[in-house]
Length: 321
Image (cartoon, rainbow, N blue to C red; front, side, top):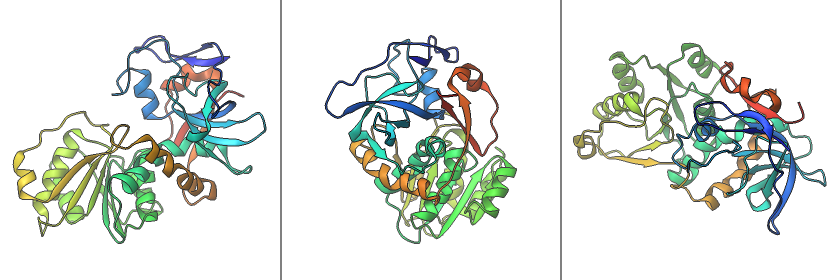
């Protein structure tokens, strides 16, 4: 079958051929791939930097997708372990890791949105369940996952959402129609401290896609500005777009009631992640949550890997062209 194939962690995948995988157990079925999303998680696996990467090459990237069974059923699925990824003509699906989709679903929107949406959805349901009426800060709100996190926090009961990010145009959209009550532009300068202290001093939950220096600044700004430092604050670390490490003064953990937790593969069990997929998929198929997919033929994967993409869109690779 045709597939995107990673031959080196230093180069984009190339369009090539590999053996078609075969189902191995009673729960598995071979599907025709309709669409597979090009997510940051997929990129990090393909360049060898994701913490789950074992260094084995060649590999087919792709961790999820939408496929069609021989009977015509449309499924969103998370790829099982030990099989080629989803950026191919066919993939093996474990039915226990799949969600049936209505026949009139937009498979490209689902493929584009489920992975970025899953990050905050699972975090706010499984790691730190969101109290009704909570106040939430989304740190890194101008990325695809952050933009969805703003809407998901509102959908899950947040009364007040602060969106913080670098891109002023995307922040403006979040403030106008994207669900954010307040926006804070991050510039990397000391002005960020004042903006975060003013807007997010008394939030209950932080959804953090940045880490690195922005998180160091945000922790200092938020914790020192809290009116009641004994008020619980849950800081959920999801992504590290701005850097893998931070310097964390020990006094922060003594001087405020802050809980630092991570959300991702390992900190959330596979069964817990899978349990959340049906309801999340329902929100996208119903239009409660939305995405803007950019369809690219699988044969153009090498070009697509480095192509600039409008901020509101996400590339989905389509084996059918």
